[in-house]
Length: 119
Image (cartoon, rainbow, N blue to C red; front, side, top):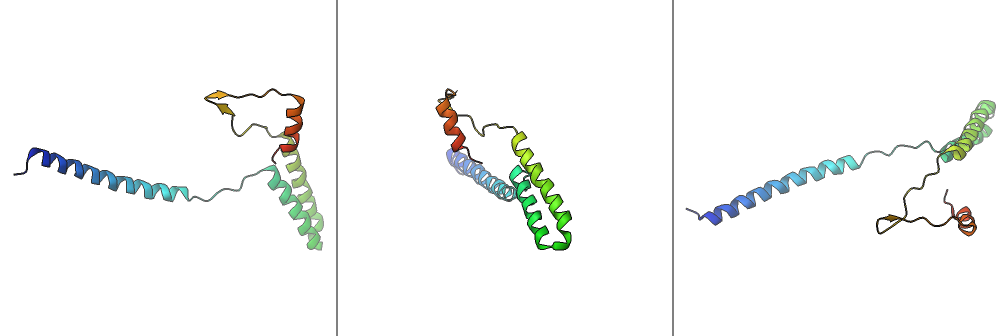
């Protein structure tokens, strides 16, 4: 007859094995879920690129030039308008030790931001 502590050790090992099997199942499910197909976003750059592509396609296909050039020009203008009307929110907040850091908006900072803006 096994002693009491040996029984407890066996129970602990048994529980640990069940936990390991359960986490393996969770990992395989999350791996499958993370490989989803990415969507194409409707951004101003994509619209402008599609518009230019349609104009070039219209130049290649002479018979459909008017139709494709018109649709392409409309898409390009829509992308251009969308670029200037979208909300300009920063992607992240600058923080230092849990506090939001705001730099003063002086003219050198504005000038620097004008040329360092990523688009």
